Image (cartoon, rainbow over all chains, first blue to last red; front, side, top):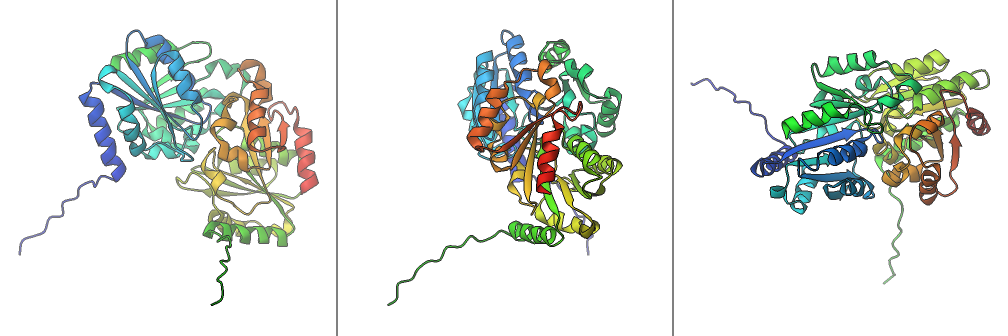
Length: 215
Length: 215
């Protein structure tokens, strides 16, 4: 009797299958896509505003914004010069690949180089749903406190880059940058990091250059 | 043939049933219980630290802390003088009545006047799960930005009080207090509000007095 050799394959979840389809659409159009995640108010929209304003003459940028309610963020991205689409999740605490897939036809991907997806402000749930973007970016912020990597490990573990925003507030809040970075390093060794202030513009250049090198 | 009169009752969800059981346990023990919710880093733990330190000679305080990982917050509450219990949700983005119910036996309710439940840092999901506490408190913070009531209406709509923390940062960040308050008022008219800074201590008295008047 022949031995049976179990073949273990990763069975893709429905979300992962749709994420792969989204990725294929981005790739077919030659579009580089990023998924920006953060706590509420860490500065996702400000980073997108600054990025679009700085790069709009070099990259054709589209923006898909996920929010529980309002189109405030898509409006801000559009004002900065991006083609912007709003997804209102109607209560859902994260974007998933289905929502992104239904939003994609509203953007002409063939006319874009970079698509920025702004997720719902949440340090937990968005980390669990692949969207099909090429890179995931976490925006952290100084006033959130230096313990966040330790308390939200799933988010810090899964991202390709961490943008530490609001460094202009370092003099005014207790924040141990070394403790914070030690937490990141333990969860996601060698992950790309940027320290900047969207408000003052300090530190934006390395982030913009990194993005240009990928897109 | 008799007319059939449909009797429509609210069918309690499993979570709501357990929340009612939790409430009954608090009431039987003469304990006032509050559920503190916020974005990551808005200052839930700082508010609890300051509250425990200020009131520990007048109220016997127990604290139940929900976090994805670590016992940092329960440690801080214990250091401030509370009987502290940690719930690690192991990835879950909110506390629910089941988790609270399984933590309650670790506190001697008969020896307490006030139980403070610190929820997972999240402006979306915790609003959907009643715990059985008497009051829900939202901690907002200035650096999160003034658009949060508009973008996270479910959370702002459901709470009994809003504590606006980090007012010491008002000079350093763009924040329209009137726009923020207009959003709160539209969602939750007349809700109790406090403006304070856990860091400087400014504005803590009204919050402490409100709590004392309830507990």
